[in-house]
Image (tube, rainbow, N blue to C red):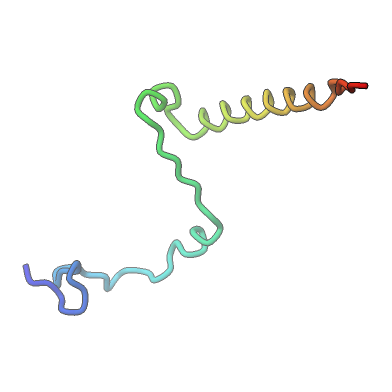
Length: 78
């Protein structure tokens, strides 16, 4: 396997003649969020829908706790 002279990682056998330049550029520009779950966590969240549902539930709990914390009267010392 001979390597191409301009890029040591590209082999001459690679054929990109049918490739489409920038095929995923717009989708990538819109932003991506990739999160890698540890195996023990992934066991309980098999797909993106279950992860999103769990995180939305957590967000709801956090918002309720913040609302409670903001409503508590502040003790004033005299």
